[in-house]
Image (tube, rainbow, N blue to C red; front, side, top):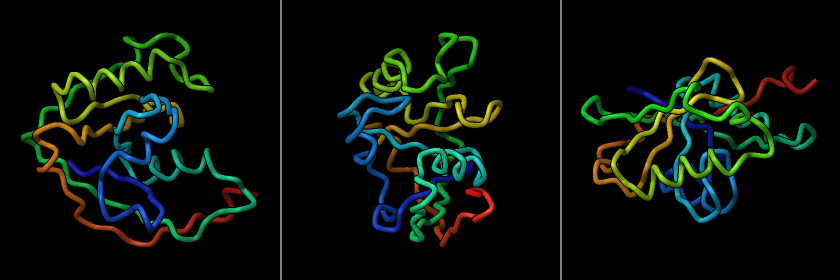
Length: 152
C-alpha cells in the first residue's frame, strides 16, 4: 500500500517520528515518536494546510510516497470506537492516549485512524519502534507547492 506525507525538505530524508514527539498532536502526546501519513496526496496536503499561516507559506515542501508492504498487519480505529468529540480542537487526551498506547504496546506497526480534517478519509500512523518498521520505505519524493487559490 502506498501512503503519503507532506514534509519540509530538511525533514524529508528519513522517517523517525521525532518531529511529532516535540509537541502534542491529535494522536500522540509530547515525547511519543510517531509518523503521520495520509491515504492520498490531497489528504496529506489538507492535513498540513490547516496548520499553515496563510501569509507565510513555505516553498520547500516535498510530497513523500511511502510503501507499506502488504505483509504488515494494520490495526484499525473506527469512528464508532472514538468519543463523540474525538475530532475537536484543541486535541483531547483520549485520542492522544490511543496513539501513545499504539506505540507503547508495540503490537502493530501501522494504525489506521479517521481524518479529522477530511471526514470519510483516513490517515495512517507508523510506529518507528516496531520490528516491521524496517520494511517500510520511502519510494519517491518530489517538490510540492500549494495552489495559492487555497489561501485567498
